[in-house]
Image (cartoon, rainbow, N blue to C red; front, side, top):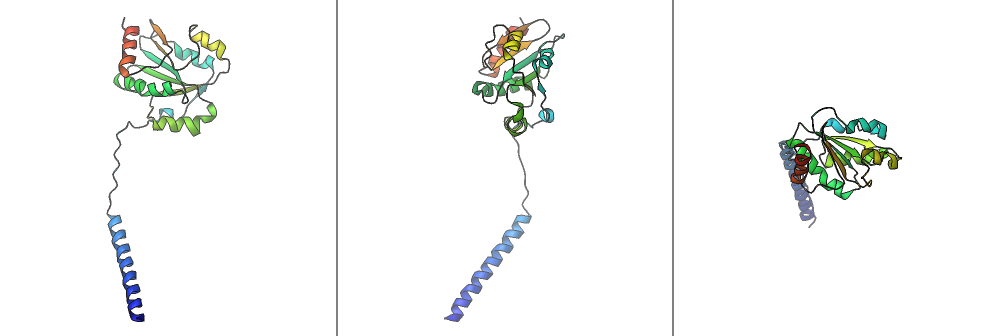
Length: 184
């Protein structure tokens, strides 16, 4: 009986050793391949500047015929987050258009929340933070009709300018508004 118990234990140990050897040999030959279907996150947002309104204001105007889209948004704003992929897709289709995403999030959250958010969402357009507590003053300087609600988008070149206090519902929606603003 003792021989049977020892024999079963020896067989069990031999089985585990064989299993371990097979496993380690087979793992050495595994080739890892990573397939990415999303856009590659660029380093454009490795450094996110924090501006007050006086520093942002010159970015809201141009002397050229180039089209600009400036979008005021925040991570906590659901309609803002929903429209970001449409703005990204439009920019991808129109590399001649310059996009600036003005985040209204807290500067203290850049490293812990904003950068990870941008990476997860594959946001590759330039992001800056507007940190100016005197919003009653600078909102009127941007557009006297703006209530201060976000998302808020300015589409402009040196001749034409339009303000949108709403979210865009699709790339086509954004494209239609840009065409009405710039091409008419």
